[in-house]
Length: 394
Image (cartoon, rainbow, N blue to C red; front, side, top):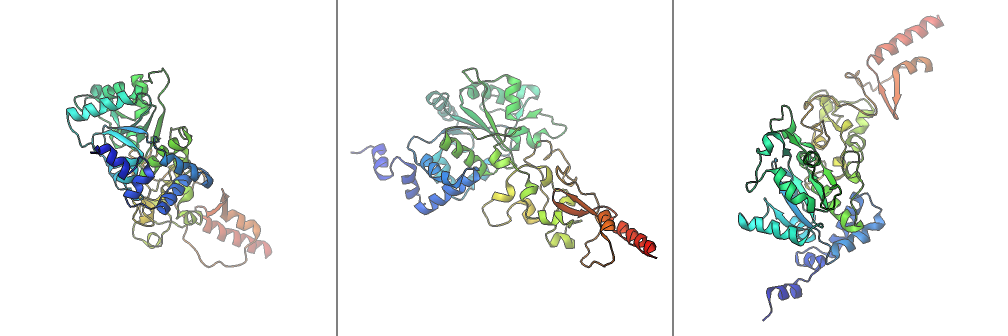
């Protein structure tokens, strides 16, 4: 009689491509997924073949140990709702998720045994994923798992990982728990490792990739793992430890409402005419001009177009930007890094009279970064210039 393992290998096969077939995912969908992930990672489209090969390798699945500290489990919930393909056919087949307090079927001593066995079998090769901030006040006693504080768990687990991913804004730099007055002393993973002096067993620093967001996009996590699978190295990071392919550009640069910003068309309050017409939300407190993320490009939730805050008419909260989300007031105007408009604009005029010369027009126009906007009081300046020209001609 065949063993269960022999039956599975014969009926399902050892490769991910075979498991995708069993799960009802055809080859065309798999190719489309690989191509989309290649673009998401900022790689040339021609690299999609290597991405597919990395996914299909029998031994490619990286082992993941996923820890939960101070958080709401929103990042895991978001990951559970990935739909192309679904979590069970993609994440659990592509990634060997050996330990996760949220998703483990085991409990108690069995769960701890799974963690110990995985660490022992994959020493120096597993990816550590941390969801949630690390409390530093009261020796970390605000959060305990199996009787251990986050600091104790990190000392035991982190030195044996090949790299760590801080998923979500809480794990990246403290998130909502770090908002004033921050009673738990919440910090992000990288800061906690630095404070505790935790390094790898070989004496080198543990690389930490920050994937902020509240919740983080599941596809930014997936793309980071696929990048590692494909190129056998971690993706390029920015100065804040974020994957550049996902956090390399301001939300403001790719926002569908950017043309309205450039033209000086702003919603003044919720429900007004400009808001209903899709005008820029800067004056309502949109943090897009100071927040780096790819939300406008990949959207969110897999439920159709415009599925991100600005797309449905709400200002960007800046959840993925350190010092912005959870620290600035919701409707406080953002610090714009390129063109900073004034707090008030004149009305939008669709009809323009004649009689103005080039010199007086220069008083009204303000050109910066390729965007032409009317400055505060421009209309009055225009009228004064017209009167001056009229008096000179007389």
